[in-house]
Image 1 (cartoon, rainbow, N blue to C red):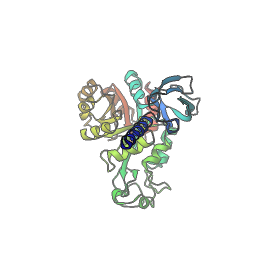
Image 2: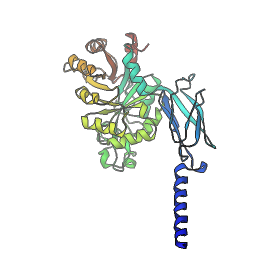
Image 3: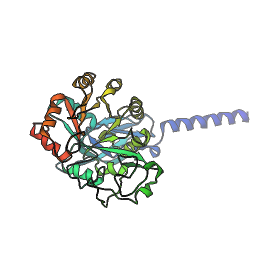
Image 4: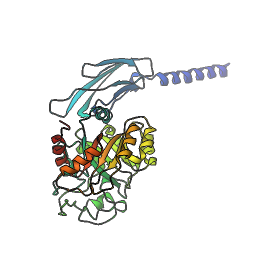
Length: 375
């Protein structure tokens, strides 16, 4: 008899424990909400630890109030633009059962890439100005540097292309070459040097003069432009892996501010496996691989005024698959100006171009505006 009573008591306690654990208590509740977002980026709010029985109300701070059950996710997109500050801070208040939460989030004026791509598709007079290695016509600024990034932001350039490598101790840094020989006053292969060793050397400007700047990390480069400019991460021909690069971007909450250039179908699949909404960006020959995935993506083609440009027919075929066209123009063009005849020929060859990668971002901005784009 005692044994049976003990058995029943034990069973009751186990069931009670499981029931409490399933539904949770007010003390176990936790708010799940990020802190930094782009304009129109989905902002998701949920409360874990309360099971599904508690009522939940979310006040997003902009006049929008949503209700749900605890354990469910509430999503909102902020559309307002600040008055010149570049961002708006919102106090998000959540009532879940008896628990109250409040968290301040920051929403930047910069449109999230998902919405940007749709706007580009619909606007025939919008062409993004993407500058190669953060370059402008100022040769006194090192490529792929924080100062170059700041110059692009100050000049109203839309996006910057930067290159990633990884050090021997696993730090993702920004450098086009696999060695530091050309861009710094030192020598060595990045993958065989620690981050501390690389920091002993200074960057050279594009005239070859030594500066006081160091090779930046990917995290430093991203934080310097958070909410202010778009990034094209040219990573897949480099030494940093898909996971290493995307983990940095994801940890900063900046996936909606970056394109990931992929030089192979395998890299495309790796990126989208990491996050289905990744903005991959591939060569035009891989347009069919992009079309297998949901979303709107860029393909890259090449314009060379001396010959060897991507054919207009190949570009049109990629566009027929639903991709947007980006054109890189770096070969046989000046690095201190835009040649009007070259730009006009490019626009004639690729009439639906939506982004142009170049080495003279400031000059390209003016040249496009003179032709009635981006006004």
